[in-house]
Image 1 (cartoon, rainbow, N blue to C red):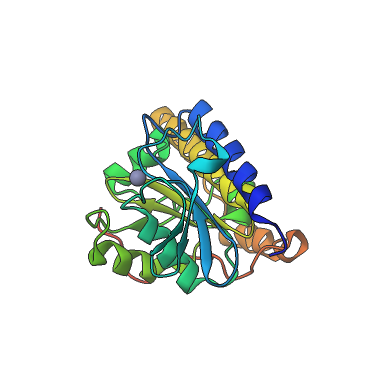
Image 2: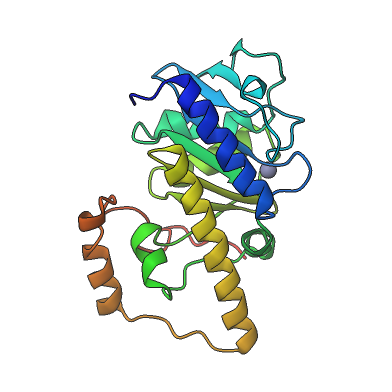
Amino acid sequence: MGKNTKVLRNEIIDVGKRMYDRGFVASNDGNISARIDSEKILITPTGVSKGFMKPDDLIIVDMEGKLLSGNKKQSSESNMHLQVYKNRPDVNSVCHSHPPYATGFAVAGIPMDAMVLPEVIITLGIIPVVEYGTTGSEELYDAISKYVKDYDAFLLANHGAMSVGNSVLNAYNKMETIEHSAKIQFIARQLGKMNTLNKKQVEKLFLLREKFGIRKDIAPKRPVKKIRS
Ligand SMILES: [Zn+2]
């Protein structure tokens, strides 16, 4: 990916601050990672506030989750990131947090699949709810694997949100978009009306993806399997 580890460390620290300042995480929640090369991942450790990280806090693990360097401990959630990297060679960064509005949808089991905001339709499409699985468990990885190839943004049932991208900033920006969109949809729901764009309008937006360098096949429609709510 052409970026050295020092640059990636600084990008992760910067994004951690933004995530913390925006209230996407409380305490030591959340994790951010970046692909160093085909065998190594730089990732935030457990037990550290994402708002106050220092470069040495970050650790490097291999694709199987073995600690390669760093003094801090791995998070039980780091395997969730590895699961993404294994399935998506195009992804260079993964961002996970618990933003209140998006997590509200995740707790309610409501996928963000209403076609309402053009920018969200172009960049993310539908944001599905990944079925609940205990953190660090196979059931969670299996659930993530089901969606990861087709989506860049996910709600994790009874847990939070996750976004992926070709750079640290790209993944993080998607996290902001998820939360902003969840907040707007929540307000529209409170107002009691949600006008959705029609099929033709949505198709026109999908056509713009190429212009913006966005994969055409990301989350174009509802997941094949209906998500329980
Ligand atoms: Zn979490």
